[in-house]
Length: 116
Image (cartoon, rainbow, N blue to C red; front, side, top):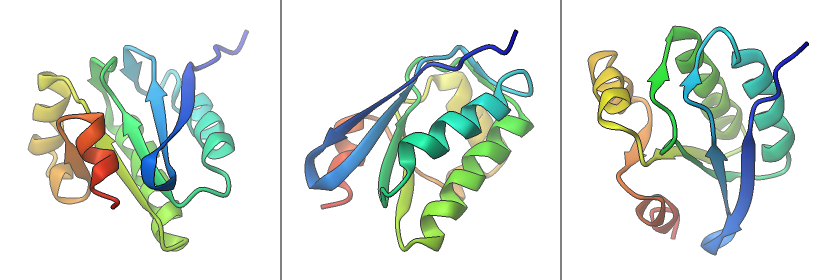
């Protein structure tokens, strides 16, 4: 049986969509479900923040999925920002130089405010 990935989208100030990723891992085991779910939620939105506070581990396929979200929104003159990463996930992003690709914020509020 296909595992459903848990995402919750909420609208914030400045017409920003905040998506809460409620999974321990974003990896090869769930990346396809993540991409499908996130595409459905992001449809028609240009300003998106992904709250990663619950995520403990991201592998290369997870990074690829996040990059495809960023590319999709950049292609629509939008932006895709990340926030509330755990120390381990943040360290991985820095190791892989992904902090140069993504705008990463400590808090959801900072990420939403950055669109103002």
